[in-house]
Length: 108
Length: 115
Image 1 (cartoon, chains in turn green, yellow):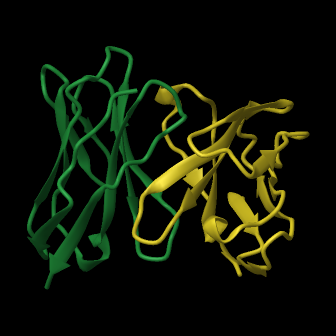
Image 2 (cartoon, each protein chain N blue to C red; image 1 turned 135 degrees about the vertical axis):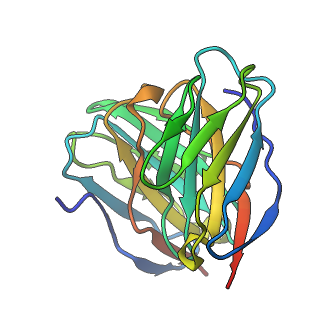
């Protein structure tokens, strides 16, 4: 499984889009890119995952670079409830290894 | 569906005591796992199971035992508690081990303090 690199923290304004970057330069062809988030005092929750193509769901969009060495999680309109730690994980199985993640602050 | 249920939610132990953290899921998931999260840190994988009767070690297995006698249950046993095991423990499950199965469902966590 490839190691991922994320910024420690990011800030956003409420109702603006947020782009959370992730580098996974050693990713292999079978590694999926997973995103989870953890709200304060809660367990992590699934956000989105993908292999090669960009993915959209009700929570977010995942943009994967053509060479797959990086990806971006896009929250289209940040709300205060989106303040959380966001984890980017690269894995070819469901055995997910979490890093430190990016702490997202959302300002009203 | 209840999802992933962990008990107890809070526990205080003395050094050297043993205990079992319970985890149950009602989604017929094959894959289950245990993580620990120390204050201000990310999650670390302790043990995981890909089905009844099959378990394997994660990143930090020392001091913990697991078993998987049924699909639904995946208990985590602390053999002789140490202060270094003070942490929040999360149980998680998913359909299978394959990455494309996607979503890992987490329980609410069990906060353990070892004095």
